[in-house]
Length: 92
Image (cartoon, rainbow, N blue to C red; front, side, top):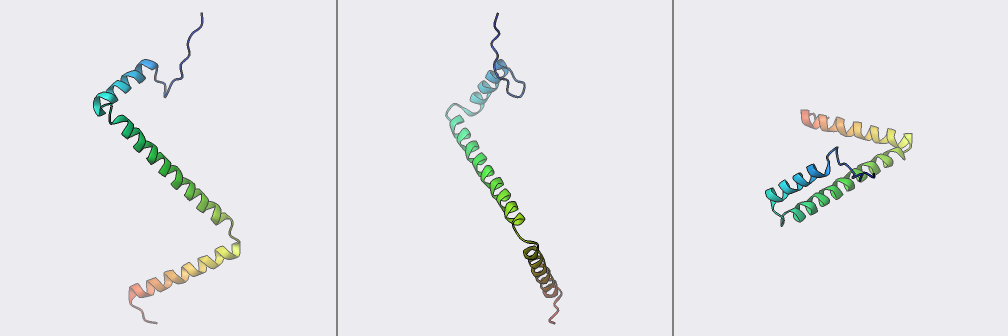
């Protein structure tokens, strides 16, 4: 005797998934579900693009030579010092 194996999502069986789907249809209406799915898909695409952008930025940082990083650190320190002087009102 063969048992039909259905994939479980988060440990939920077929009956539970059908109940959740029925509740969603009752709450949002059948006409709103495609709109919700599209919005979720857009949000996931934006999230994916942003995380990819952050990872690309990290890779760009790794490609810099130690001299470039040191120069950028010095420039940032000078900018920070200038900003602090302006904040205190020093003119020198």
